[in-house]
Image (cartoon, helix red, strand yellow):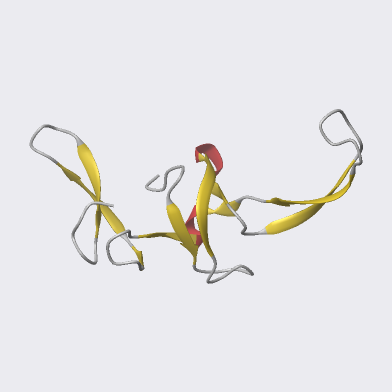
Length: 102
């Protein structure tokens, strides 16, 4: 998967289309990501040690990885990326638009 934790992504389809946020968690076995402030759902929660009052809370739900694109830090656009090997053998992610490392 080309998307990692702490990447800045933009949602390209669904109810949250156009929103940008930081990736909080990557679920590789289901090809899903959790993005900050995107795909908010309401959850009824009982009172417990952590949340004394309980009630209805809003939290981010997972979104499929095909519905997000990485935002390049250089050109500030949602772009596709490719991988390139350096001379020392390490791989880096390259923006297809500006050909610079993401």
